Structure formats: structure tokens, C-alpha cells
Amino acid sequence: NDDNQQQQDPPAEAAVPQDPFEASLAQLMQSRNSESRASEPSTVGGIPTSKATGFGKESPKIIKTTGGKSGKKKSFVGIGKPMNDVNKPEYDDQGYTLYADEETGKKSRVFEALIEYPSVFKIKIIGANVSSFAVEMVQIVADSCSVGTEEIQYSERVNGKWLSVTVHAPVENAEMLYAMYENIDKDPRVKFKF
Image 1 (cartoon, helix red, strand yellow):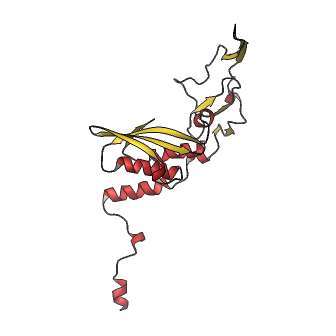
Image 2 (cartoon, helix red, strand yellow; image 1 turned 30 degrees about the vertical axis):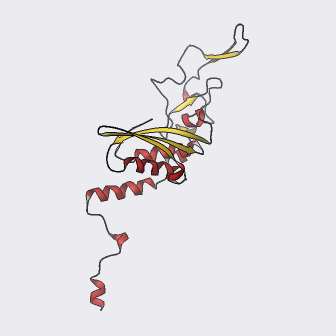
Image 3 (cartoon, rainbow, N blue to C red; image 1 turned 90 degrees about the vertical axis):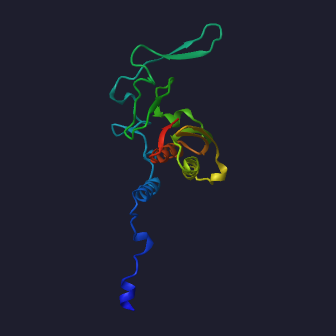
């Protein structure tokens, strides 16, 4: 009997998938469970963006004026480096795009500055039109938002070899939104998202 027990197959969790696709899928599932980079505070040069001004460069001058007939205060950036230049975006140490408040000059991550939470964030994901791509993208969004797939609204559109999935994600905060983007990026079938 001892000989028979030694010849039995190893437990299932110790088995390594032999099929390259299965190995890739196992690696993908493991990476989905890793912690998001968004859980780290935003820093530039090791300095938290909430406490830094200018990041070693001269901060742009904010000029406030009173509008003509309306009397409303308007602000604009003086001559110099433009704030929020789409051609030369600034990034924090974690790789996230920074946004500078046009009145105060305070910098923070884009999704922290421009979106009010909680909110339903609409994202379009485009990828290869294979197997259950749409359902799996909805599952990633649901897992990232800590809700069931039945709570996620989505639509899909096929265009030849590409599939577009528009998902309405119920996000509670910026960290959740950044984590969702990271989890979507981990799937090799995803070509674009916006």
C-alpha cells in the first residue's frame, strides 16, 4: 500500500500547466491579484505631490482678473511653461499623469483631480474578437470595483477581428479606478482602452 501511495499523482495545486495557453492564463490570473500601483501615494522625486510645489522648477504664475461685463473672476497662466500641456504631460514617480489645478497650481493625479467619487465611470475596451473577451472584461471590471458582474452595465460591438466593449464601472475612489485600468492592461488581448 505504501508503494501505491507514492505513485499517485501530486495534488492539483502543485501541478504546473503544460499547455502554453494554460500557463499564460494561470500567470494572468495570478497577476490580477497583485496590489495596484495606485495604492502608493503620488510622489515626484520622492516628495509627495500634495506637499510639493513646482517640483524643482519655477511654478507657473497664476493671474486672476475680473471679467468685463460679467464681473466673474477668471484665471489664466502667465507666460512661461503651460500647465497641463497635453504634448508634454508630467508624471509622478509611479507613472501616473499629473494634473495641475489652474487656480492654485496644486498637482495631483488626473483621476483624483477631475472625477468626483463615487461615480459610474464609462470605459471603452478594444481587443481581439476571440472567445469570451467581453464577458471576461466585465468580470475584470466587476472584480476591480468589488461588485458582482450582474451590477455592471455593458455593451459590445464587433468590427471584424476587433471587439469593442463599453463598460459602466461603479468606482468608489481614484485608487479603485487606477487599479481597474491596471487589471485591464494585464490582459494581452486588450489593444486600447479609453
